[in-house]
Length: 183
Length: 313
Image (cartoon, rainbow over all chains, first blue to last red; front, side):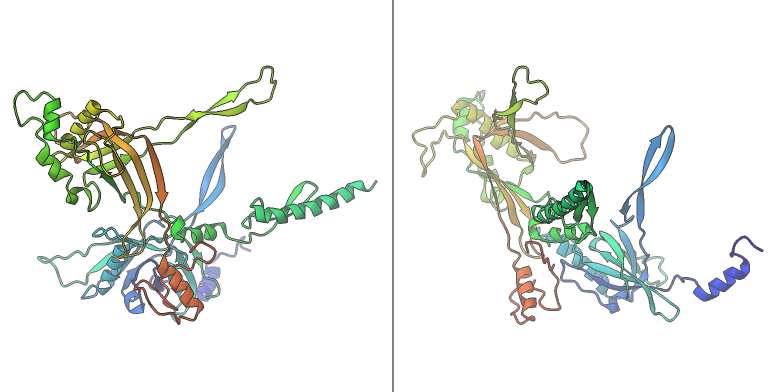
């Protein structure tokens, strides 16, 4: 009798029950910014190309005793929270890109030194959802305290281009993320 | 006999009372509540408020939002009238060349409304605000054994200098305004003169008032407001830093350091009411029936602005 229940048959049985996450079964459910007049709807979010589920870490506190290092768990951090990157296709008239640019201007407009004082609030969020094969939501995660950082360039290649579709990257900062239960 | 259990009961009762009192004094914060004490040990409860969310909620208020540190201006009012060609050439050696210390035209241009009033002194590049310090000493008692000595205040430290660096441009603000000002200040001194009244200034008065206004954001497309205004009274520059010329072109804009003296200073704030937030909140309470009077007002179900329930706006 095998010492574990991790044989090929077990793998096949469990995998056929639980299936696997696929790289297309992920969507931006909404982007709800605060401190700006910009709003996003699903006609914008459908242009999202790539995004990721962010990470969460526990810091390590090495503590020595008689030459041996004990690794003690410390505080939670959210790696990459200063620049969460999403890639978008660019529409013909750059509607979506202009919305993100408007958000940067509402944060600080160097032309007249105006901008919203707002600390990115708990209501400034991005909701990310994992989907199943029927495109039903299986998990929802919310990035809290979202604010704009970078709106990436659009790279044109006039001399050697092939008519390819352009895309651009957006970087957003957030404070932390949380799982939205019972969604 | 039995007093131990009785003491434990009384201790627990007192612990509950102390903990309830601590809720109001802040010794027993809602984020880390202790519900009682038994046998000298605390009995902890579940957090009633998230430390993280509560901190973030408070930062939503304009009062506690983090300001930008680069938004400031300097105002110098007025520029002394004794900074002029006639006086400088009378006081300093010119070697017979009328161009030496001929500063009138430069002064008229560099201290004009456009350079000094529209957005403060355009040449100011950095300001070092003075510290505030008092001295303390101890009152020692002979043979005090292990007791610590008492402390006494020992006076306020004299006002430290105000340092301002100015951008060096083709017509140098530092060398044609501040440097002559330092020279004139030394010649005329800081004495009060009978012609100095509330309505007019003696032409030899070298003292001025320097304002430093630190601005912060309000809303998008709405002007900033000064969150902190420093006023330095009876100011005069006391030094202009030296400058070494070389044959390597540096990668930063040239600036000149100056130090200023003053008799005293004052500090004021500008509290700000984020009216769109307030209107938005009132509007929500009345089912959105309030008129939309601000373009930045979100209104019911259209809130762009924070709903800071426990914070100050």
